Length: 362
Ligand SMILES: *Cc1c(COP(=O)(O)O)cnc(C)c1O
View 1: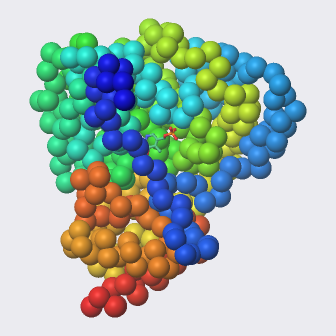
View 2 (view 1 turned 90 degrees about the vertical axis):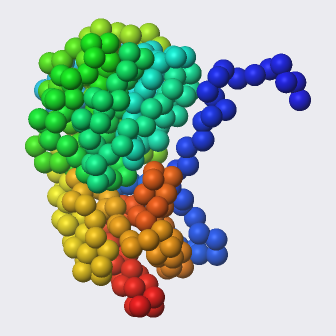
């Protein structure tokens, strides 16, 4: 091995991201509830756009994503010039770290925060700083206290993953207003679509010089496999991010499919309605079995067990029943399992299996 060839500092501290499992050894048919995917997938219009794009695969894509940005701007009432699109919101998160944080700089994320914040900060050579939450809810006071003269970025997801909780507009406003002048606040709105009437933080990104919002097509839009996300923020920040963005970071297939998806408001409504109905049912049924959860604002429920042992035993039992959920010990929630709200049959199967597990272990 050539020991003179070394990666940049920080890179070897990265624990590679682990996605939700999708297979169980020896079980043919599984129900995957480990990655917060929409059980309905994309709507018919998005599927049609996807297939149609196959005729143009020899062409380079549009490099400015104008059509997609226009559609997003129209639907959300935003300025298309202040939108940037990426290969998932993960890519926007990565651009932000690359552009605004480097060696010696600190990037704040919260105790149970999404792991890509830490990974992207380390990849940029910056130092991730973890701030405690209060009972699985982002603690604005703790974030403000943790800021130092080295802080450059603060990431919160609102609603958050894997807790499913969210903080109100007043708290977000207090955070944005209380940060030092040179700190950029990133509001990750991956689950914003599940909250009726919520703008995902757009109004803050619209009116404040220090706030960026990120969004994704991977959750409610059912397009996780295609990798499309976007960001919205001050013109100066979007200009910076566009300089580090590769010119063809999205294929025309991604652009066309996402454009059709965002314009199909009927599918959005249907998915939100069905998710929120089944989420309430699932949370209540689990609570009746002695497995409580915080009120979720997302498409998953963070089921809380009495102990790590019980959570792991339940996870193992669910696997024998072909049900894959997500262990979240890596998010400092060892006694919890994150269960994606699937279709009605999947939700019923989960509740049935947890009931059997409880009976057996009683
Ligand atoms: C799923 C998720 C994302 C979305 O990532 P993509 O790269 O857009 O698929 C971003 N943030 C959080 C908190 C998530 O849970």
